[in-house]
Image (tube, rainbow, N blue to C red):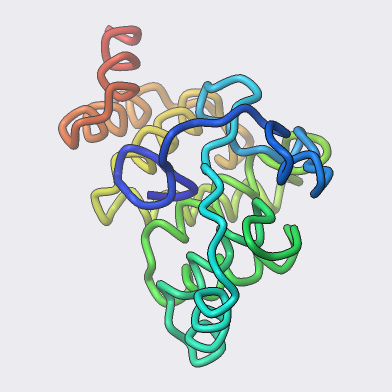
Length: 193
């Protein structure tokens, strides 16, 4: 999944943002948390795994060699400061590298970060359009969380031309998410019908 999600990858048990010594020591900014986008309030979508230095070293080496899975997982660690220093800009760069190689979870994550994370909570118009493109790519790969997010973006006119809302496309995306087992997809299908 993107930074977690029903599609797999990344999200284990949820933990409150800033909770625990690692979150407090890293000074995590709740505005950058991906939790609120998923409807978890101020909870984090990544449970600290505390990887050892050899694991981090292996991920770094593989990421530098262009392995999209290593880039994605190292970016997750960097995003949350799990076993490495928190570096959101560096994490986003690695998510993008993996996304450019077709990694669906990374594509979803790039879209999610560009559209909904950051100090203001929303990206620029250009970032929003780019976010929609990445989320669309991930949704086309069958990633339920991406299909659900795509539905939200169409429903709310996020990243669309002229910020136009498209309820037909939103409902179609929510239905696809529901077909792939997304409880959120089912909820929004029911809400829109």
